[in-house]
Length: 290
Image (cartoon, rainbow, N blue to C red; front, top):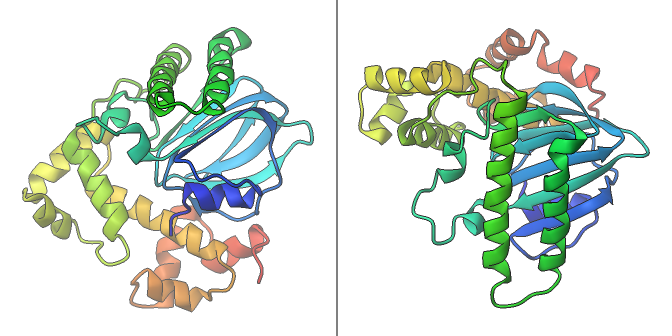
């Protein structure tokens, strides 16, 4: 269950038919209070106020000069926003950025995402000044459509991502994973899991799809992420569980069936193992009611 760029913007009552959306210094509008999973890249710089948000099931408070950048398949759950919140926001589809680029994983290889799918960078006003100016420039360019507009926007976006990667190195020096390497194989594995998670939870299935041995997949994934393939599969399955639990029209039994668990109790054990809550208790805690 992915939420497209157009669908996400519709929640904000914004119409957009382009493969990108740029907002410089706008108000953060009221959003639905349930988790959703995006299928596009997102970049936020908080310029005023604060927001409490869960990203891939981890809660953060984002305040002035904090930067959040996330990749497709990230789960977002906006829990609270201050009345004075203002952000610079850039959303763009993967295919838009990668037009005429041969490497489909070029953004991931910048090592921008220190938490696999996202990075949260706590900076200062000096560090964010250049990025805020780029946002203003991007916004102005997007409003004057010429035959070169899209190429100019792509170029500026790549520059912004590199700037943010540099800031991540500068401000997150204590992150033990900050310099981890990545590989096409690891990224392809994650992409396949996200695509097939509802049907296949076996590592062997993905080894066959990638035409490699189980041992080699473990070695590559462990080197790139310090996790096992089983842990990656469980993390992505848990994301799907959070999304489905946010859909209050579905019963716990229906969610268990959709996630291909043998029983409701098996789903309950899995969810509680990773969250310490039962599915029902999670819904009660988050006030997710039909």
